[in-house]
Length: 184
Length: 175
Image (cartoon, rainbow over all chains, first blue to last red; front, top):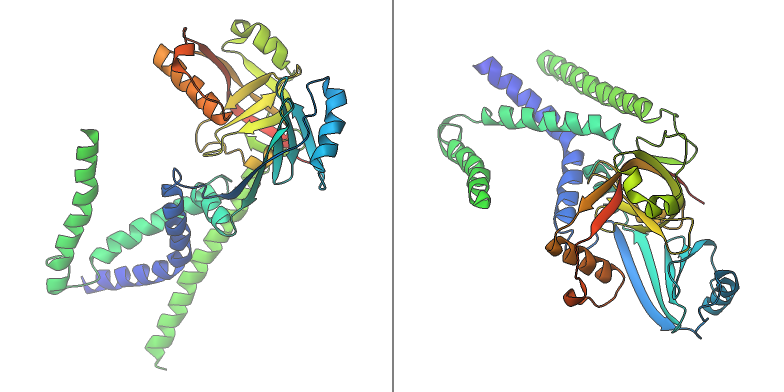
């Protein structure tokens, strides 16, 4: 048992150090995306409304230069699109304009990646797929090994047979009770 | 430092080295799998595109039932993207104002908001979903919300059929 416990300690310690960075990635991003209905965890967005002189609803070829001139766009334009008789969109890097051709009302949308958090979410949600799939699988395996080896690290009243055991049961009960309740 | 501790440290270093080498090999293997180079130039999403011919959006919308269940490839400007999960894009058609939605499985493909205004080639199966009255109202309400318009439930008098591409891949040619 002493040798087994020694191996548990070695695995738990070494994998534990290795897992610090990855755990922070998943934990911080987990909180961020857990509240996706409250905020955009990936992009900081801006919205500004203003009015220009109505360009009119004539042919797109005639309207487009007028819109561009009245918007006084300074940066490079990716593309434009006539969504309907009165809706005209201008796409820019990091945003764009929605123009009401009849009224001249303009909505300027902007978006920018949230520093660090965007990358953490990208990894957490595995948006890039391979090779992160393999890394995430290995990390999952590491967590399993750490969880199981952690059970045997402490002996006595604070270990599996005492307070530690009760905490472990609590940790099992929490998701089980939630699953039962949430299923109704 | 005692001999035992020295041996222990050497063992630990070997243990750590083997883990780091394994992780590095995993990363390299993953990149090798990711870069298959089988699709047209541009950033590839999902399985990319492989269908030989592009179907005009105007043709799809003119005779939608003729394409149900078929794999279609469309091309156009990305004019809308799902802001929450990146799970769909709207592609502008060849006729002014026409769009077709490419819906992908949540998390399988994630379209970033940066692709708005970029030229996209997308592929997938053309599907038709007959909506109930309640679902029709929900879809109309969501569309009105996205477009910043007011929605009146009373204006919805009949159920709608929602046509879209169940997307498997795309290639985005950014500027």
